[in-house]
Length: 171
Ligand code: ATP
Ligand code: MG
Image 1 (tube, rainbow, N blue to C red):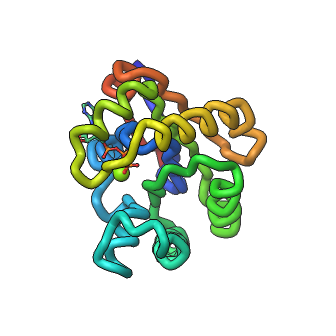
Image 2 (image 1 turned 135 degrees about the vertical axis):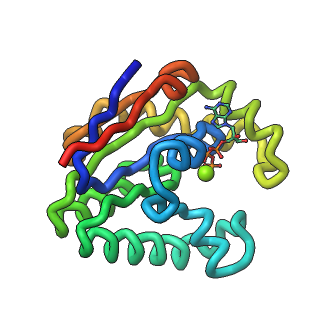
Image 3 (image 1 turned 90 degrees about the horizontal axis):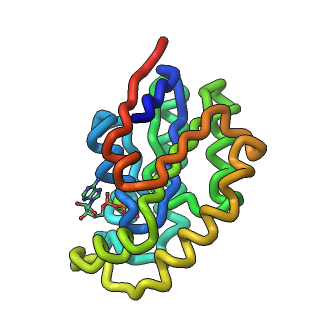
């Protein structure tokens, strides 16, 4: 099993398609106050966690909370799909501004798993095309993550790898 040894002062960027298990992984390994969820922020500004049209407001909120935490030297976890390099660029810049370590955790249990899991979620009633596009985009950018500026890159590429992973902190 992989042990993800994270510096205490990290900005952790989860990367994974919808249904991959990001929020589940985050709640297992991080305190609720450490995890900043784009869906949660979407809900805070418009009462509908699935309203994609207010993404800009929701992401402003994610960024603001993350920045406040980093300013206070607190670890933060960005729980969003973070599929594109253009989305990840902002997080790397934010981490650098506050001298936090940008860490990428890629959660990729496979497309079929994402599709199957989303079938069981009443709030994720979209077809397989959505996670399919996400998985493709993520895999395309995988080799470039270190080059993007992530100082640690962890890839969990099977259900077993995700479930067996252990997250630790070091001062
Ligand atoms: P989204 O991007 O849509 O928010 P997500 O990546 O946060 O998706 P989760 O909400 O964590 O995905 O998980 C999706 C579904 O899969 C949930 O119903 C969850 O219970 C289940 N699930 C997640 N991780 C696991 C796991 N390791 N083993 C079994 N079921 C899991
Ligand atoms: Mg989630």
